[in-house]
Length: 561
Ligand code: CAO
Image 1 (tube, rainbow, N blue to C red):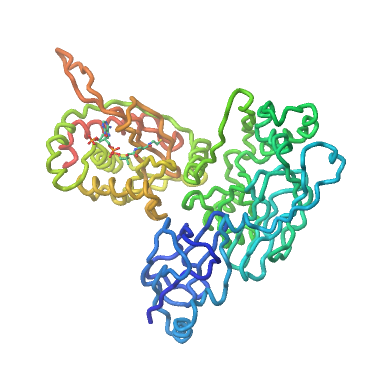
Image 2: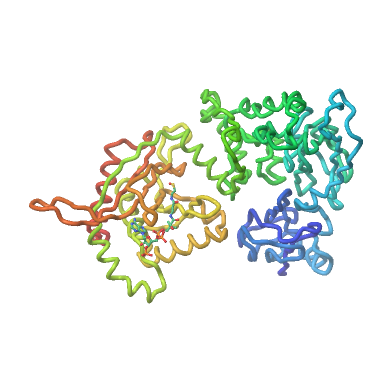
């Protein structure tokens, strides 16, 4: 019979975001199989099916906000689970009954019992810095049982800023990062990985900086120049306490070049468990999930890569880290953390840039006839309620050329010894959003007409800008197009959307004088920039590819051939 799967008790948290959908309609699930992953600012939690059966439909998407009791999916319970399912229907939601694990919100985490103790009486106690010892303990974690420390992100002597992650704890279904409630220096760590904890268990003792001390410790994060403010005037007195700070800041440079700080690890409980079982350091794994979330496949791919001995880009490559600069020395600054989308994008772009030898082929294509044709369709486009830009024509033309040059619609295997040619034409389209760049995929673009492509471009761009793209919307591309045509420019060097091997950059159409045998005539010229993986494609092939694309775009009747 049909059952509803609901959000269980997640504490007082409301409007918690769905960050991963783990099943599709038709999937068989067991009672304990996770269906979706939800995440608040500080905790992620898998919501299990509760009863075994077949998923009939999902009623939420990635990015939706959910609260306790909300229906997330419908499931046909399997015969043997029927009795259990019926029981569950009359009782409370099974998962809530079995596992009242709470997903803590940042507010709750910040409200963690943080007992202020006496001012520190250590050797530095004579300094006028108002340093206080603060114990940071496990906050309210609901009635969760078997809560274990799975990561300790700090050690004595470390400087932390407010909200930096100190410790990650995990119950059977939820993991939670416990942050510093204020800036300071770690004096003592009271737990280790594996320690069982409960609400109130003391985690660390922090030497919290008072006002004067805060600016001196803050020197580590580039604020020492602000000591010229009146309250920091006794610079001579504050100076000795600043000594340790620059060392702290230098520490990340010593980490593996592509390892992230622990506080940036974005992964759910099951993934963290798998990583621990396999001995994988999540700080070194690139997340391909939504907003850079590390999914199980990323952990497996990491292990596979290490086992096969394939070179990781930075490890052993001797890439020197960039220097850490205190910019506040030169003037006023403001620190703004990157959004998750931007941070994930940065990581993907960096990885592609390091792994792939890029070359970009630039060309200019006469699209006067195409533009005239497009203008002639303006009224029809308005009637249909779509905006007809050059992009659908370019995508359609790319599909045709990709069929003629199959190695551009391909990936290389891990050793770069085999082409994996794709017989589908799923075209990724770079979309600029306030949160950063995302690349939704137009599936089977070769089988779609210009109007259909136009509609899909608008639809996907809207979804991207409203954060409604699902993982599936962004998977499986075989070639990408990045159009800056609306913005301007005469050319650029797009970074390949690995594991694809090529990407077409499109710049702005401009009217230019073109020599036509006897005279210059005004023509509308479209700049194209094709970046390609030089391991897979050689320059002559890229030249032919762009030339052929130009032939088609200059005379789009060829699209019909
Ligand atoms: N030359 C001149 N005008 C162009 C053009 C071009 N190459 N491409 C688009 N235009 C015009 C369109 O015709 C439209 O004009 P009208 O409103 O008068 O018809 C206007 O520019 C706006 O187009 P658009 O940007 O809304 O639509 P699009 O189909 O061209 O692009 C999308 C859609 C989602 C790809 C785009 O909005 C976008 O986000 N581009 C940014 C991609 C990006 O950031 N890439 C850089 C990544 S680094 O590799």
